[in-house]
Amino acid sequence: MPSREKMKCPHCGAEMNHHADKILRAESAATPLDSIFGGVVLELHSCPGCGASGARSALDL
Amino acid sequence: MSVRPLNIPVILGTTRQGRMSAHVARVVTQELAKRPDVATELIDIATMPLPTNDAGEAIKDSTFSTRMDQADAIVIVAPEYNHGYSGLLKHVLDSCLKEYIHKAVGIVGVSSGPFGGTRVIQNLLPVMRELGLVTIFWDVNFSSVQNSFDSNGELTDASYIRRIDKFLKELIWMGKTLRYGRENVAA
Image 1 (cartoon, rainbow over the protein chains, first blue to last red):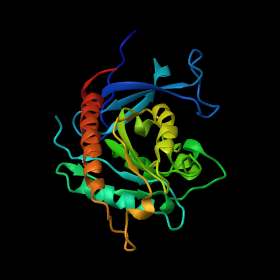
Image 2: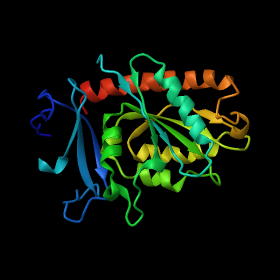
Image 3: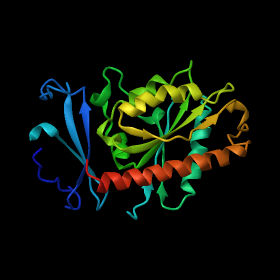
Image 4: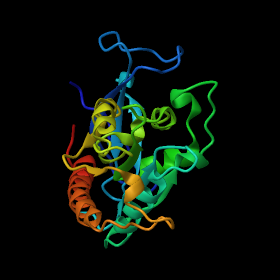
């Protein structure tokens, strides 16, 4: 799998840790669905500096 | 390890008038507040705006979402109604998702009967899993709750303090561990 650029914390600017992927099954019809998982695969990120969280779609790859 | 206090809100999961669970939630919040390095607050779902013309993340309340996002662990105080959980508790929990991922949850069951909410706890476990929460293996079971508090809402059965202590120790350990994992262990 190609690696993505790490998310930057919106609060302190530190590199965030990608700690989980979660399927969302109740997104709006406008959101592209992952054909294998039948939902939107979301990446969850957390900042080791200040604890802030972040998320982005895994389909941006 | 991070030196930020562990943030552990307590969710009072019922809106019923005269709810004894309010006393339980207050005691658990007080016991949490005694611990160094823990920040806590009581979230009463009866005070939340709860539209019923939609559900899920479509009715997300920004205040509740922020509280869940900032939480490291969660306590849910769940009274048992007809062997199940309150519909409004589920309605509130379903309004968030990404806010819960890889966070610890402990459940306090409450019942007027002898089983201390064991059935509501069991019914909540698959919901917790799908929400991305990590359940602990300690519960607190308030059975015959109407006999555990006096008319002023003060706890009369001191044995619950020790039970809550064991429960919170495990929840804090899991909360610290999962926070370390979220912030330092890559997926």
